[in-house]
Image (cartoon, rainbow, N blue to C red; front, side):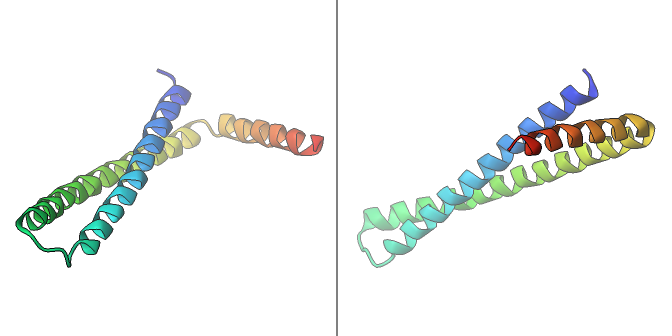
Length: 111
């Protein structure tokens, strides 16, 4: 596997995990709002459902924190690999940066 393929796969995984974490945070916030909205409701069924939902949210938050830790670790690993690559191949890194800058300049110049 080449370095660029490894970066693309790492980036895709990190982006999808970050998106999953963001989506999951929205779901957790909505569930918490629902629990708070039904706090004044009475009845054994609602109390039991609220308790079960709170337990599920606690588990979900713990899993979300674990997933977030994994994303941070993988991001740090990708940054370390990138740093090592740039130190080992400075002229390639400069060439790649110049090429990307040239492409961006051409694209901006067309508008």
